[in-house]
Length: 316
Image (cartoon, rainbow, N blue to C red; front, side, top):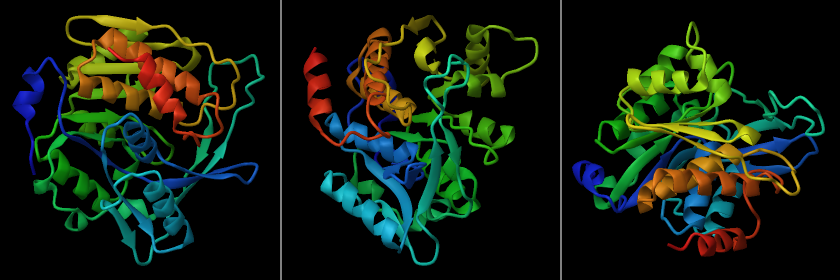
């Protein structure tokens, strides 16, 4: 498979090629019986496509009604579905989403609640069914941690990681589907890592007290180029070997829910990596887009005009 890892690290102008996005695609099922496509990798791929990149999404759905609907939605949106495998016996992924009451004064834990069944089609992504990656000019790899809970998908991811592509790991600790050892293994060899403040506290405990110290501990332990921590309405923090940067939160005029806001942030951060934006600018733009996603229902906008609007604002 084509990779330009040395060129990626040396170029001040960003990274050319197609992002590879690996992991779960599901239907998010809200408590008012609304069903929407979701899963962090699907959300990220959708946003990258909306902003003009051509992601290659690698996942697996079932040969069932929901799988057919997902493929229809992705195709209608213009995404490349050649990397979406169809499992003959296992069901398409589903996630029950319960929103926290945003009217509460307690903002310490305002994340949506996810109930994730086991043994779904995306647990069985098969590297033997990947499209011919050698024919693609690939830029870098994005993946989370949920889709590695079963051996087959974990093996498919190892195959991709072994290719030498620079890797962006989006930590998503979904109980009971993670272990510290498994997450730490994913962080080894990554280049960029994004996680939220709760996840950072789960991974780094003991005598380390400040968020900056925790983020620096992760960066140093796993020899990462960049660690970014999001704090919802408290903004974000980025740490490299040379510096630390914070971004203020954006005001959300009409808050609907925060489903997919972290994925929106990740997508724009990756867009900034691809286009060579300065880190402070990338953080600011990622925060702005994530705030906009909090103003819609679910993770994905129904109207592509949102991408055109932000792209016009971001013209260099």
